[in-house]
Image 1 (tube, rainbow, N blue to C red):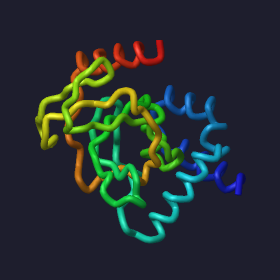
Image 2 (spheres, helix red, strand yellow):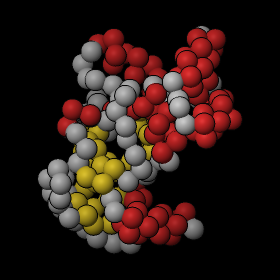
Image 3 (cartoon, rainbow, N blue to C red):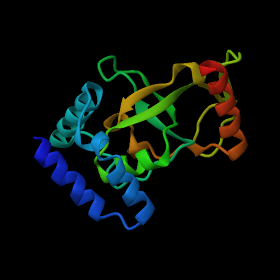
Image 4 (cartoon, helix red, strand yellow):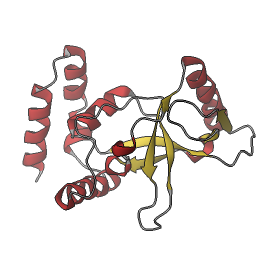
Length: 174
């Protein structure tokens, strides 16, 4: 199994034209070839999803830090579909697009506007249907197959908004 992951990884690296990103991928090969338990679960779920053909995968769909997409946060509960803010760096996001990484760090949004030190309000705009708050203290991981690309990109945070969320996270992790 490890050999096939290695082969898949090397094949994906060959498709990358950016030499800096290619060097970063090779330097961090272990995170793509070995699978920690949560990564292995996400990998298996992504493979199962592709076999079932129930939802398209993210391979080939570019995601970026600061973007808001819909995700199914609890597939067993049927109803935890909500917008999430992509928060991991764009190198890992590009690895998701290549199909060699299957975890995404996200923060959920809530349309229940409670305010407080660990929430950041974002007004309805672009395709984001409601004014919402980014729940910064609920940062977590989702499998890449949980994002719902058919619903499309909802909106992107502006630089000032990313900085404000970063300050909230600094207060949380401080």
